[in-house]
Image (cartoon, rainbow, N blue to C red; front, top):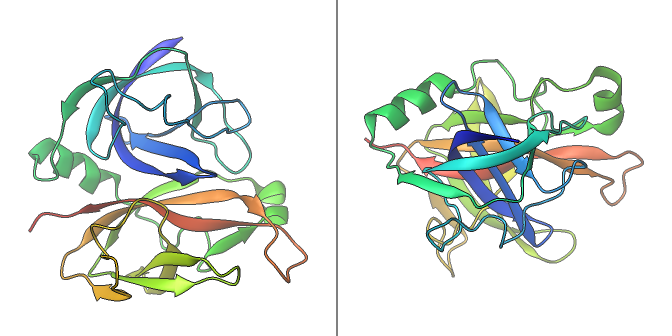
Length: 223
């Protein structure tokens, strides 16, 4: 077992549990998981020693049992059965935070090698994945509510990256961005989005399984 200092960038929903992701000081991504197969983190597991759940921009000391990469999520790290310690509550205005996040911004021309919002499982099996987490600077994104084919309401955000328009589901708690009763808002700010690849599933009407992109965390960039 060892410990790492991680700046939390995402605390989002995953199958009624939590998907946590963060950055190390050198810009390396970490996704804590509860099992070697990529199991989500429970509410109890992501409680900090101060009595509250981890939240974006918390600097925490995280106990790691071992690296646990899986095919579509190479950043996974299996957590040890020890408390998560809060070292500091950081702010987006903090110079060190701004420096780290600016250096960690995704520099490639596409997200995960595609201009689509998903990657086929057969492609991942054939080619593998170098990464499943990226930090994107989204310039003036919009947020909207959409009713899915299953009838539930989903919040999505649209932004342009390297000339490609993306419209991705938001999986973190976003009521502070798009209030109840509103269906659309255009942000006047830029944001740092933590874009993650979800697990493989077969959408209705498709023959193949896909891993879809989603926005697991968002931090408004200070002016």
